[in-house]
Length: 313
View 1 (cartoon, rainbow, N blue to C red):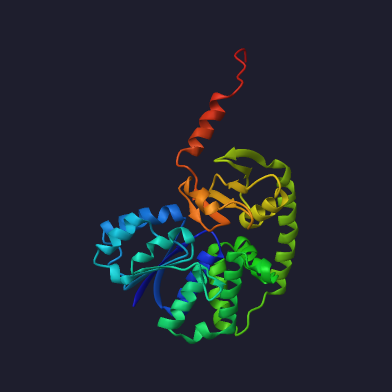
View 2 (cartoon, rainbow, N blue to C red; view 1 turned 120 degrees about the horizontal axis):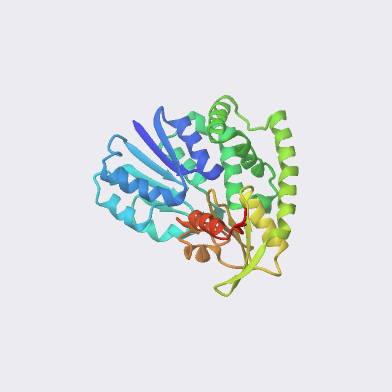
């Protein structure tokens, strides 16, 4: 059986399904996407029959839009595709039998990884999946992605994201494919704990340095704190939302190399709704959106046109 996994490139919740796939299937391929890129890929792949060679296509921590869902429904591979996502902005797409968007069940906030893990346990039982190391790492990824690590004070959940940043995607996947097969219990090595300790100091300094660089603007009757940053998206967004609690309704993080990120606290704005105005989506207090297509061109043009050129030079 040949499997294709399509998942989210941005964080452990999108990367962990690759590792789970490796633990279960011998013949598989995977591709990682930003949410804005998945739909274009699927339309092209359906049109060019690229997906015909796979027996099953799993999409995790991402969901297609209505146009793609209709294309899948009218295709000959509709019975091969399973989509497992947890973003509430896509719940309306549960009307399609191959789409399963679950934000919470049995009082537990779900993630793409946790939904995929449960699916694999039910449909493809495998001794590797039963290792305590696997179930614990899945729980860490879920706690980190839903931010419930803070509720339970599970600091290990934060460490997974730190190691992904240090290892990079390929090395992170290779490391844990091997580790989870060989170890019944999950643990961090001494070297990893040292890296995590160093990163914590670096992260705190990075966040502190950005606290006075937030620009507050009124958008749609909301006070929005805007900051330009590339690192520690979730931690930065939540820290700034707390720091500016009395001044802003939400935080907008602009990463020109990747995406827009939105964060708010529980008693503040619904950032999922706000993100839709930027062609984004997500959860009530955490969401994302693609960088507008021509934003970099606008910035470059502005820089060129705003130069103070000395004509006598």
